[in-house]
Image 1 (spheres, one colour):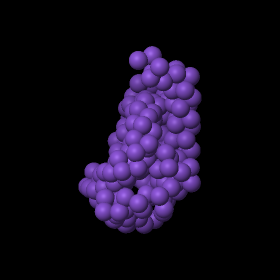
Image 2 (cartoon, helix red, strand yellow; image 1 turned 45 degrees about the horizontal axis):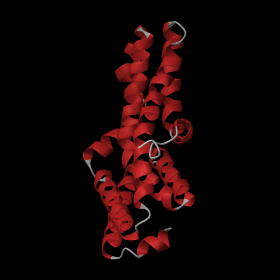
Image 3 (cartoon, helix red, strand yellow; image 1 turned 30 degrees about the vertical axis):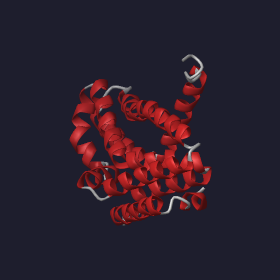
Amino acid sequence: ADAMRPPVLAVVLFLAMWTLMMAAMMLPSIVPFTIGISRLLQASGARRGRLAALIFGYFLIWAATGVGAYLVLRGFELIAASSGTRARTGAAVLLAAGVYQLTPLKRVCLRHCRSPVLLVLQHGQAALRSRFGAARAGLAHGGYCLGCCWALMAVLLAAGVMSLIWMAIIAAIVATEKLHRHGELISRVLGGLFLAAGLTLLVAPAALLAMS
């Protein structure tokens, strides 16, 4: 049992890498929101520390998510030895991600990530009252970003086992969804592509080799 337990250092390094990677990928989402709250805080003469609390709350979401991501990644690594199981697992991840990309929940979360002004209006007063309120505002924004991107993160983890190139591709897709003016349309098109890729893996598992 002890031999199967992952080294603490490996877990810590993964969580640090994951949080840094998420920080880079989510930068387009956190910067406008942070600027909006910062201006609100300055205009009201709020005490210092509110902005740091907000950023802490935002990245706390991604640090916590890293624990689940590590477990998922370990699971993918264990299944990767069997090509048949690997193909079925990849298909399941792609199909789940494809379906989620087309749901109303995805659209709501994406709109909040793309329009942080909504969150400033919703949580700005709470951020003004206390550091705890500012941290809650950061948590709320992080929660919407997680709701927007968790399916893409699952695909990222599955693809990361196959190729680092795919990790860069998924990261670019996340940024495009958030920044491009047709981000919602891109999200739906991406959902269709994920569904098509998942069905392809189900009927032709050998296609996985071409994607590796």
